[in-house]
Image (cartoon, rainbow, N blue to C red; front, side, top):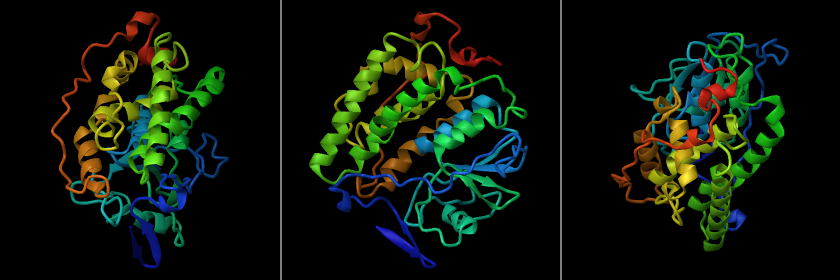
Length: 330
């Protein structure tokens, strides 16, 4: 399914036929960096950059959380798109306006940045208001840009979610989590063959078992320190029971059935600033109403009832925990 707009083809979801029923995610097209010294061509400046996000999207959610945890709210502005994705892609409306470019649809900004652009239009999208172009639309890059490039302007510059002495471990965990969990739920949910679906679900739950065991012996994914690996996992876990179990058929177990993963999810949710980034109304309505090929009726389930504010047990590992375990509590 797709739409031809002014000579550019915008696919609504994904081509699985050419991949044996398997979902294959397209690589991000804009991969520039912002640097403190400006050597990248994009210097870190307050008020220059604008972040387009969807509260429904786990990839955009990563960037929102990092922006909040670093204290960049007054440095980098943000506009959320409407929760519904129709045939024109992510949209703006009166309640969700594009305050920078006045676009009706996010694809207009992609074409504004690159007139011959033909790729997917995704969030998060980091826009340079001065140069009038997209800096980056890869969530993994944006998370790291926010972690360090704006430290001279951040409220919490000492919070380091990608510390040098943990990078190899973080990268290793991220790699498995990305392929089998973050992207794994989509591989299951958008699969159009039984074999592709079962392949994705098996890999997903093998990794959830691995993560459960890992978190049984340490507070966070790479030890006693909260890092970007925990944030990247969280945005999938917080959506898992409300959406992925039913909508994407990832129903062998719930996250609530994994004691360590469930407690880990609640600890991250309860970090100062994180719960405000979780919009379950956007999350549920986007998935259940936008994915007509998966849920043709568009009916949104009322449940499940989940208390993310319930006490967690992660303090049993001792140490400072939380944001104090990033180098600066604030």
